[in-house]
Length: 316
Image 1 (cartoon, rainbow, N blue to C red):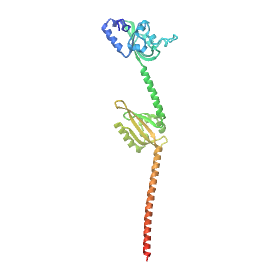
Image 2: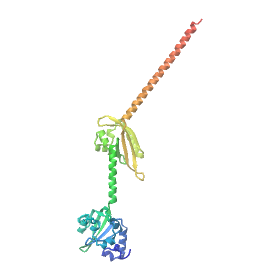
Image 3: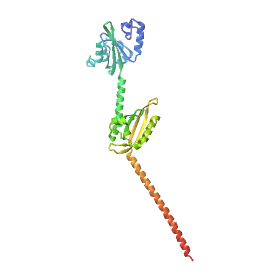
């Protein structure tokens, strides 16, 4: 960088102090924030490297064309009209001559809009405003990340509300913080009640000890949770559910939340019980049949022995 480079255009106060100017230049050029300086007419007289990257323009061409900061970041459209009116947030902030914060949209040379947050700090000498220093933070990545998060949450909610199981999440210490609408519908209990009281008040009294023991163990050890219990439906009847939960962990293994499901297994369990009852009945009948056969065999042997005895007596 040569001494005459536009990059070295700094306020007079800094130019009068070479050492301070060098320090300031180093700080501004290495800053992640985009830094701009304007004169009293709002012409841009300084941009650091981050500012050049944000706008797609060099300080040399901006200074050569005596561009205002407004024209720099809100370029005219091909038809000559301004992309944004003169009363943009950054223009209003510069016109006030006081320290201001706000948000605006800066347009890159290639037409890409960048949402930004800015701070305008006036540079004064006595009572006169000589210009301003503008710190700008590009919000594009943050906005994109937030949009991606919202999209992900919408997808998650859609899946959680449409799959044929109850979906729930809990904090690392086991408190429910989300329950899908299916649970609200099946139990006829307000969401706020489920979140504050958990499953305890819809859980069959006989199944509470095992459910509490398994959940407490999972929270203590960080291992998966699985238990079968009966939950009271809106009709007042109880149905069997299979509850499962796994911990979601961060990169260091710390539990962030518990992800769980309750699956209605009442029909399968009843079918299993009917099958088991049928098998038990078949086994009972088999045992009874076997006992009857044993008795018949014994009676047959006794009869054969009696016949043999009679034949022995009747023989000469």
